[in-house]
Figure (cartoon, rainbow, N blue to C red):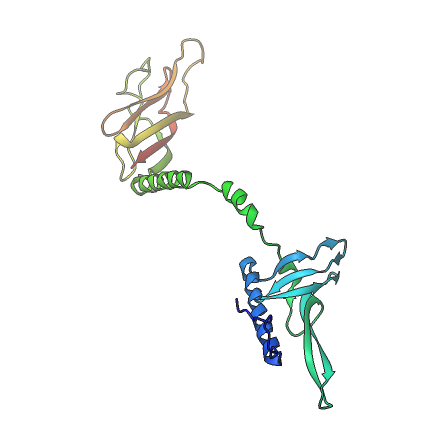
Length: 254
């Protein structure tokens, strides 16, 4: 910083210019406040109940003493200028005191925006609790792997079909394993084949019994598949009409 050598012999020229040089020299200290940032509390300003103590703050790159008091919403800057009488007889402003504090003005800053900076000695501890670069890179690799897998992921097309039908070629007797009698066909939905069949469930909707219902009756409803269709057989060993069937099938393709 600038320096003035006062300790000299021969009559030092102590004029107002020298004092102005001093003032300009210590203005550089305002830049130290920029290390902490804007709207920060450098010291003091401790809250006790509804009051704040005196302290020092930084506002828009300048360091100001803070006049404490009862907490309100906004902080303002006040200026007090003192005048002195000069040798020529007139009074002129010679010194201005600026300080921050609570109040209202055309320009103000929210008190809630003021924070305390992290002390430099605490930086290391704060950084030590952060995730290290190795773990971050490992996570990045895992994310990229997942993203690549999603690009090639095949989303299945699922078709659920339900319906009802009646059997054909009615026959009376024990034909519970004969798929050429008392049968009905179910075909895959459009766009699907039997290779896409994931599940199928037939059920009895109506059976037309004949004679007595006793121990010699056999009741059945089951199915088999081939390359093109599902064949359902359903009836009772003693019957007087075709059977009615309901069913549900699930087809899945990629």
